[in-house]
Length: 258
Image (cartoon, rainbow, N blue to C red; front, side):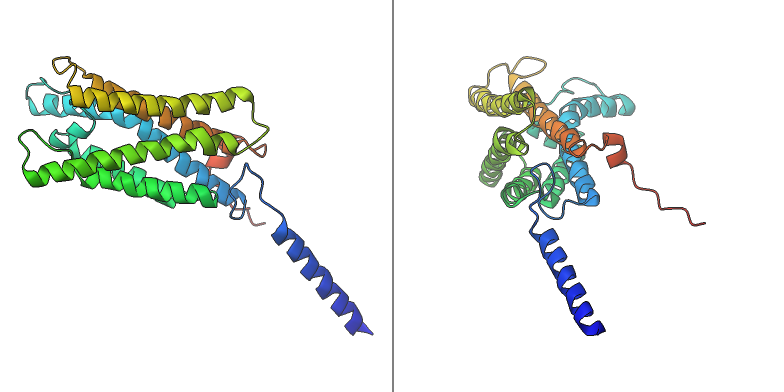
């Protein structure tokens, strides 16, 4: 008499598991499992990408100035001609390390299939920018070739980061406020516009005698644009299901045993 009941319970459990598996993930949460731990990981990665974009353009010149002061050297030329030009300054390790960290964050980033491909490619390009330095003055043929790879990797990296702003972050939640959608759109357009201006500034050499060159300014605000967008996307994901950013980012405490 108990065997039919066991069979019924087994079928009920199987249907329940199937229904749970077939339930689609919402557009606000990662499409892998949607669990709070996965959501917190994605938030951390977005914050990491955003913080690098916000801090790196400021840390490079300030680091050069600080190193010169600590060594008792002249602070002339402490602002590099471009962010990539930091490779030949005291903040070379900071520049390379920041880009490698950016690449790791992007490669580890997982949200849905499309974003996974974009972020993996962007992470590869970020590492390529770090490992292929820009060509110095009086570059050899080999250095010039590596410098071309540097420029190609940098352009592709910024193009993909712009795509996140123009498409991915804007389509995550159809119910998001219009001003949020416009903010992502503005960030994506700024990245593309500033990338074009940076190419023009680099080719024409305009402002070579300026304390801060136009090329560095274009790169600076370009990285700020994608940094702000990724940090905004992190906050948006953290509050997607009613959790505060503080609760989502702080590690969960194990329940006390009584």
